[in-house]
Length: 314
Image (cartoon, rainbow, N blue to C red; front, top):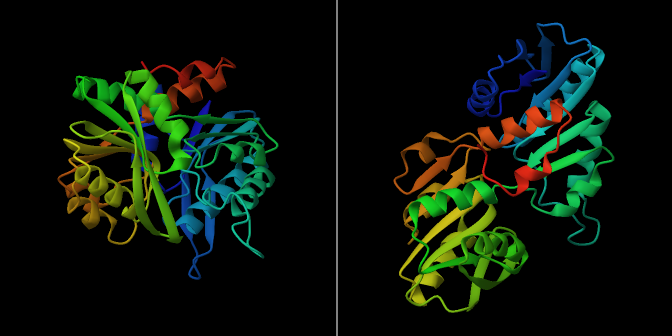
């Protein structure tokens, strides 16, 4: 078993390496003067079970090309099996035709990953579950819910908790966490006029006097989450926090979160934190390395991964 990483999130790769007590495979990723990417693996990988670690976060296209080129290098180096470990699967929000003459880019990226040489994919909280079906190779979609549940149980006593889905599409995710915590569930009905802009319409469920926890898979511009937090406070909520798997946080999102009614935004480290995220007072990251590392170990040992969907790692 070997672990190779690109440049998208080296701290998380190093944390997984430490968890597995396995050094990262030596490799160099260079760019020519015209920014073409060149990958050279400095160790023998012939016959090895290799895990290629790379999130396709910002800059999404550069990180995606690093992933594809590195897997091509591994395939041509005669690796026995290549597992693409993609904590954050970019382009996942383009999972269907949103209008005439529009692409399904999530499927295109799945094709690219497969053709580049991946034999298996390991990812975390896909934006849409059907993306698993875009791959013709085994795909394990882990959930951050067990990690979130453990953190919430350590920080809240649970007597007046309400788990809130910021939109109808996230109800299954929110319900799963609410069930684990034996908490109430509420849903925010919103209308999205255009991409990146949302308007909260009304709240389904009673949140007055409750400590509300918003649960989502991706926070990008933070408009939806901040609008939801404001609506909950206006509806009489005692406090509002948020648990989100992937902290994209583009543009002025961090400033928006800092100025919002959110007591705390908790994210996994599937995407490497920027300096703005690190210094923000109400943003915290929780480690996902034990979950991913244990899944990688079980895949390498041909053991079941399904139990990781239900229990916190360790």
